[in-house]
Image 1 (cartoon, rainbow, N blue to C red):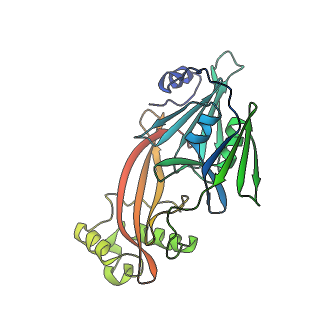
Image 2 (cartoon, rainbow, N blue to C red):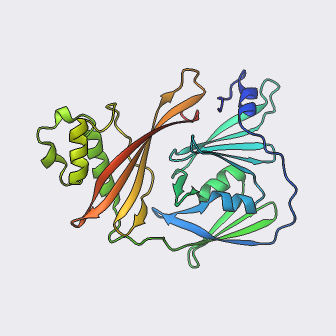
Image 3 (cartoon, one colour):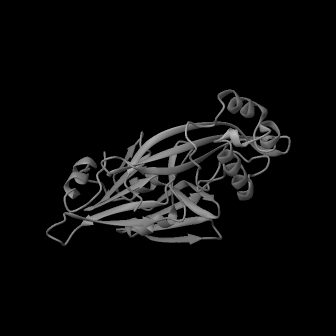
Length: 282
């Protein structure tokens, strides 16, 4: 578990986040990575593939969906689907071993096709890498400690029949929030017919609820991951609040399975998962 860095708890954080010893690497030549993505007009890069080429150890925490990186004496924590990361650097103060700094990202880290992707800008913000983007060749160039990496943009695994618009996602998000309390809906079938499949409507009516709480999910920040030409997965994550000890946050992930039917994208099923992440919200 991760501990919030304070005057008294800084040492605990360092104990809870694995400290990976710096391995010895042979000198690397320029490397090419062919798995970059463009999502919502932003460049995303596969974190592990890039970090390995830059000689930066990465640790993945499966249950928390959280990543830790270490470059020299700097530690970085990043949770998927959250627009904020933590950077821990050695403190000049005698009272603190590490200073904490939050990094805001315009897009969160996301899991796509089993790999964790981060915005290209995050590498520059957190690691100090020199990052450039070549619009003509669709290539990202990263330079750090004399190593030069080129990330090429790959073609999507699936080209959907029709891409889901941001407006449509907002509509589906609103309907899912409304489904949290069915007692307020007079005619459930007609109210949700344009947004939910018949299967999903029957499911929430059978259970008389969408979820066990009336929590409203925040506006979506993640992009859609198309799993076929007419199906997709879309995740909304909401920070519920800190644990009793205040060192972590509870996060609820709302995993929506979408299908394209009768010329429109609809929600076909929803799963919920609860996880703990490092304390990221002030």
